[in-house]
Amino acid sequence: MGKREKRPLEVTYTIRITPTALEMIRGVGDRRVKELIQKRIDQLSRDADKQGKELHGELQGYRCVRAAGQRYRILYRVDAMTVIVLVVAVGIRKEGDRKDIYALAQKMIRLGLIEPTANK
Picture (cartoon, rainbow, N blue to C red):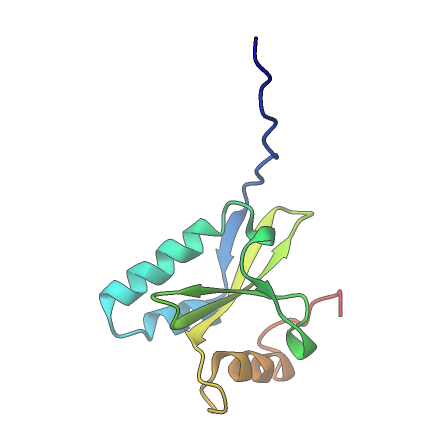
């Protein structure tokens, strides 16, 4: 008998989307783009803590993945204790622009619309 490969255990997360993130998704005009964003969010249910990149500064504790042809960003945090992925913002990366998704997320934290994470 041959050796079996040990596969790492895959963690399945429950996805939750904040009302603010839902409004951001609804604001996307192109139906196909919305579908691509939703599909990418659904993919976060498996090993979300290993996807995307960790964010820093005011957004420390959050992660980000790209969606819809690399144009959109999905900001989320992973709660390993409750096995939940919380999607907090969705938008386009426009560095230097007021509508840049990272700038918007930082502003939402300052306004109390997004909770800062405990692991700052």
